[in-house]
Image 1 (cartoon, rainbow, N blue to C red):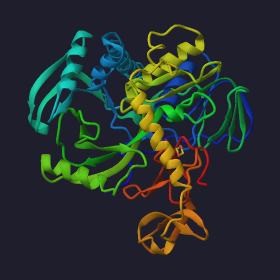
Image 2 (cartoon, rainbow, N blue to C red):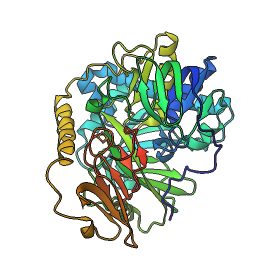
Image 3 (spheres, rainbow, N blue to C red):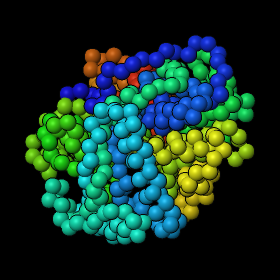
Length: 476
Ligand code: FES
């Protein structure tokens, strides 16, 4: 079994940025959102440079289940209650546009990316009032969907079904698009002087009139206060040899099962939780057990986890980074729906940079007023404060001698609070216990053998190397 996603394969490498440069537009982040934004801007004749801290598409884009669909379940009921049916309908149209944009690009450039039309089901096995409400909101918005009783494939009571939705291979798609802009890999933005429009990377500086921050989770803390408005969610995926379903399925519960066919087999996702709140682990095992309960024996070939950035109202954020900060843009918060949303947001940012109107500018504005979010805001703030104090309060009673084989713990080590992992041979790997982003205490994730931050979702390997933003520095 491989501990990687099924999408990671051979692909072209790009150089590291070693010299200072000046360009018209700099895009930070080489996931699907940053890449498509750079692509759209370059198509308009702009001079664009894109930098990526690791390899292109090595973050959430390379770990997605790659469903390109408007069928996003309860989001429509949530939006309708929060902002009204018109806003929910507008969001539906945005997703339809995003889906069509990816299809149009694949067709225009004759990209073989396993583009497959299929049905999409959001199913429910318990209460389903919210899902039913989404169904009626979607019908009013003109969506071609239906309500079905009993979904025997997943033994569910009912489902919201939408036809003509799509699956694809995101890396085949993205790596086949023509690249008419500059790309640098292994080039991490460590600091952004937003006012001076300068990006400091690990080896050089970029000056640009326009900066787009597409780093999954925004990395600039001094503007926009994104660290108070976003959280990250970790989910787990298995690839199994057996073909269990012929359409895409998703349980309406936040931590429920997600299924889609892939090659001759199936991708099974789920077990979502706030990043850094790992409990006792066992997420992959529980996922496999759930699949076995539904379908019998399965043979796991790959397994991996991914992180998604969540907003309080379920809408992405794409637009100006902050009030009064001209020429700096952000794109983030796709929840679990990054494919269609990336395409919509790439067009939106391209329009904003060009000074054009866009139908979705207000809907996705990072400065929008988020109604009914006081409870979410407070609970998010509490988690952040608790994570911060945990790193300073008390001396751990345990020392590195207490760390069992193949486990990680925060312990007292050489007079300091440290995050310590002991490998199967007994060797210790010691890093700082506080996240370099804003100082919250790291938590050991036994499933992925990583140190995860419960506050904003940064992740580190056992050596202290960064696996996920918002941190731009190694462990402290
Ligand atoms: Fe913000 Fe760790 S991610 S403190």
